[in-house]
Length: 316
Length: 316
Ligand SMILES: [Ca+2]
Ligand SMILES: [Ca+2]
Image 1 (tube, rainbow over the protein chains, first blue to last red):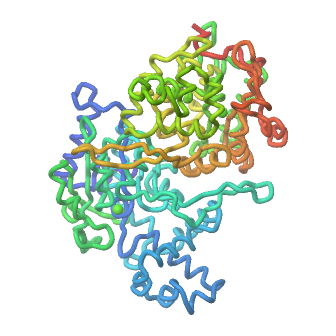
Image 2: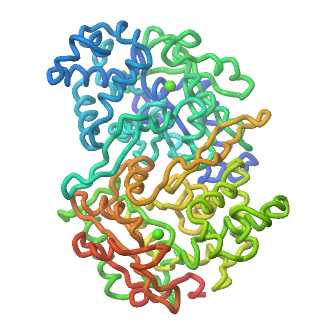
Image 3: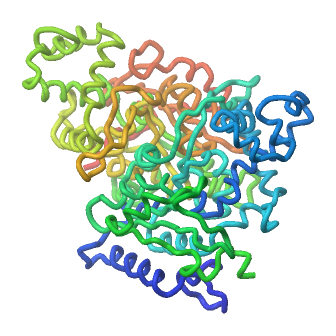
């Protein structure tokens, strides 16, 4: 409810959105929730899906989940003296992120396997929780879960208050997100879809544990997103929001369904308050999405122009 | 709401349950939803999981999903004349179920691959829908979705009315269940976990389709059930109900969590109104579950003694 107040304190829906984009969203929702309208969508079909990195929170200068993984390597390093003399983590421990990235997919795979698997789910959850409470962003100095987008929080609330179920459908790790997303976005674990490692059920004495295995079970990105939606949600969404070409198929799958649909691309245009990047970016590349926005009637949100505020802490 | 009326029409919770098992359920729910109790479970943690075959509906003389697959083979046979002269479906088309079953896993695999894959999800959903509206059970003559358990419908409603989220976690196919389970049980597609085939996102002209591939992606049975719960739900359940050793790990995972937990086994003891089977059965074998029921404080429901009615149509 707090989230629906505008800066002056009066309750207003989508208060952090400028007038034009705000109107477009309000009118669409009004239309599809009006049982007298030919565009009416019954509540049971009001499925709204959101990418996470770059759509619900910032993803620069590196994906926050990668920042977590790097911090974990540093935390674990004293128990692994060999890391500082050889192997993929040597540049990381020397503070040379570029050198590490030069290792490509292989180094990134080792980073994720070492920090996200080889432990049970409870242990992993605790590590993410601790990190989220302590680590801070290199530019803003804020905790990472404070760098969520205020206008998107308002959009999530607004859709839910109109009978929509809101889901995250992200290329990020499902276990990583579930630890903090309910508090941050009001989205419970069973409404989060993401990439998944192998998992095995084992007994540790008389206590069952779920061990995270060093293998990729499902990559919830690009054409994997509609697949992940089919598997974990089982209904075709009527609303989808993303920010990169990794979301293209999810938006396409949503927008080509019959009846009224809403597709939204967050365009990172604000180099002052956040970051500006699109077609040439290594993170969150947005190319096909911009090309085909008109074809699919996608709303391209210009962060610099369309959002009055970026982060919730700006309102305090 | 209808479901909560007893036979005489007066509203009563769990009206189809006999006094003793009814009391045990009511008292547990009262305890864990009482914020003043040390056993209190906050609403966000009230996750209840239910097996489907043999727990929410009948599974004899064959799993209903297998009955669907066999009917599909018969429907498709005119386009496949070779099936009647050779291969795994020959005995099926001659009405020789035993002969077909003698083909073991290989024949069953061919049956499922032929009837559940090689088509897109929309086509499959339509086939299940049509079958459910037309096919009838060989013993009762009822539609299969009428052979759901009235006491379990009341239990689902009762838990939901006390803030629980109810999920299906079944070895059955996730796509098969999602077509009819919302209407039958009030459980929406995104709260259904099941076995899954491969799935690919493809364009058919300018329309995206999801093709069901002839490969098993995930087997949601035995130790796979807690894994499926971790993946599709992301929270450890506090209530679990099953009927066979395929549910053992799901109940174990539930019952060994900290705090108050409820584990329930449906014991098929009623040879008159339904079917009687347990330790020696090929379908729904219940052996370890009976052995360890005391150890884990699982409630073993004696269908013959504990349920006043089995099916909703008995109330009409
Ligand atoms: Ca993104
Ligand atoms: Ca069963």
